[in-house]
Length: 316
Ligand code: HEC
Ligand code: HEC
Image (cartoon, rainbow, N blue to C red; front, side, top):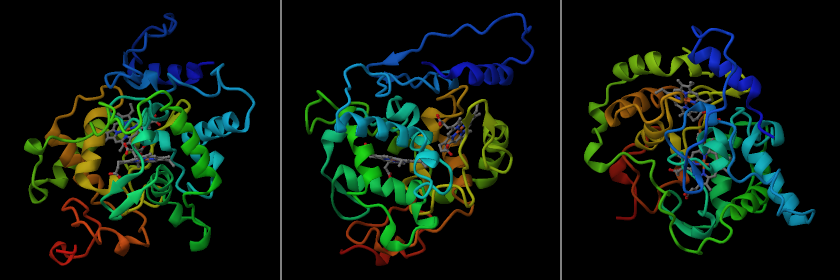
């Protein structure tokens, strides 16, 4: 079942308020790039899931199938399914759009077989469960909720295992260890990177008010659009300062290809960086274990919430 009726109506109102009400909305075809929703698709494809465990007939009533379905629900509705792990109210799918099945939105199709993988931030090998745990702790700010340190999620928490089951299902049939071509595409080319000190927050704020505020709100806290809500980009309900998205270039790479959501991809490399610098100059929850990060590898220059001196970090 498609759930886009109230959403499509609200979206229609947003983009075409001057259209005569007599015209009923015609569902537009969804463009695909391989198994993924194409990066060019606008917000009208927000509720499309090319592979949906809730409707997939190949899944049965086994325990594993149940876990795959549970993982999908957790991924697409994290605050409702795991409120203690997502105190800010953002879902995994806010950033990994279309449940991790959208091109240039850090897609997770066929990615499970790449783990274990070396993780630069932690300086050690990461299992898929470790990676999912980190997105809970940081992107979902699980450390900022009501959980005590010994209750925080880890690689064998039920929610992490269920999401890992969903992600592994998304990789079924894929060659283990073969990097999918669509992985790692949310990056600004090295030649287009603007040095951090040249990024202009005032310019970023102007771009934000002009191109983002309709959906994310003038205060960055997100506006409800039909049954979708754009996530909070800063403040207590946002990702914490130890998250990947708290790095300026990482955030710019997300924004560059998936936003603004009615016209994705139509923002320049440079503007994406100015707006990311603005967003990551704002206050957000503190990740309490930042001092454990980048102990082996160098602290990246765009990890702007780390106050440690770059030159004092690393083993070299
Ligand atoms: C037409 C509405 C709309 C516009 C305009 C828009 N966004 Fe979004 N944005 C969304 C929605 C909705 C989501 C959540 C996506 C989902 O859940 O499928 C989102 C997600 C995001 C995310 C992922 C994290 C989060 O908080 O949800 C970032 C970062 C983001 N937008 C930044 C921007 C920036 C920067 C701009 C301006 C250049 C922008 N957006 C313009 C609707 C919009
Ligand atoms: C605020 C945005 C955001 C949210 C919300 C988010 N992630 Fe992520 N995720 C990222 C970013 C950015 C990366 C890229 C790695 C990095 O630099 O940290 C990433 C990477 C990943 C990866 C590794 C992908 C790869 O190709 O190696 C997995 C798996 C993942 N996230 C799962 C999740 C899950 C599960 C959730 C929900 C519990 C989630 N993410 C929520 C931003 C987000």
